[in-house]
Length: 447
Image (cartoon, rainbow, N blue to C red):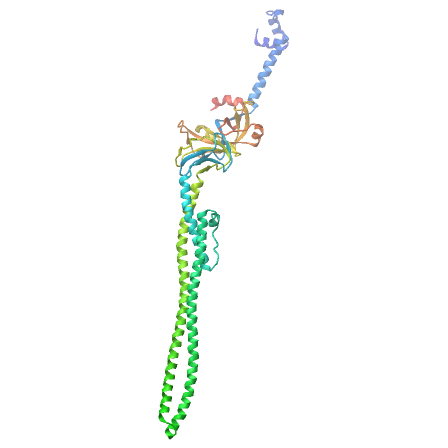
């Protein structure tokens, strides 16, 4: 039987007369194909046709596959210590959630405490001395202490420093006042003496004027013989004595005025010397305060660092040592903290031969297989960055490009109540385009 005859029998198409005679001689009534077979043929043909239509028209996603891992956007915070030390207490355990500022490990503080107290005592004593000199410089009767000094006044030693400086302020002020008062009294005495000499001079000058007048009249009487000459000589002697006294009074008055001026200058010089001494001491103390303040701050920081604290809130992972009495070397990693409530990204390694198909902004399918209730959860992601240069995996010595994929808002909605954890693996397919199945099958032949 020809193929056309079979087709006519399957489809029920009537044959032409010539074909009917040829076929009728070779077929028997038992050889007729029933309607079930015909229906099956139609179904097969229809299915094949639909498959071909789907293969030609239906778009299929194509993409770049990669293995990824959930990472914190800001990475883990590695805890280290600047100088190291002996462990006194370990206050956290693996996986514990801590808040920023919580103490993780306490180091032995004996040496740091001793250095801190020594530098603190010296710094605050110098600061108190500086405050006292400042009060002396402007003539205050009470010292205005620096806040650092006031903060430590409950310490007995610091309190003693404060009292010592207050006593020095009073005693130095009283000593200066006493010295200046003594000079002032001496100066006043000389000024009074000068005034006394001036009064005596006035009296002697008046006495001399009377004597000169009397002597002139007596001289006429002696010349005419009415008075003895010896009386005139006596009067001449008295005039000479008064003149000598006047000269002495002038000299004494000048000396008193000169002494008063010298004492006034001495008083001024003493005040200037006192201020100059204060300025010199203040300059020296300020230099020492500046240097000791830095040492004090460094010692305080070293003491504070004996409490190793969490820089951020998060979970403690990878504790390197928990031995009380053990040594933490300088700069060695102690533990890590995975930040809490930080954005999560997935990092994936892209093979070098696929990098030309990857662009920032492309969508991706992220498949998680770690959730027990939904072991094959697929959510939407988006490529946010690709490394600019080839990186090398030290474990395999193979090259790769680092891609970072963020879960989109739609993807977060699809996650529902599932919580991503740093370190969780995932399969990522970065979507690079669409093509039909037929194009995919024919691609090797058309290259």
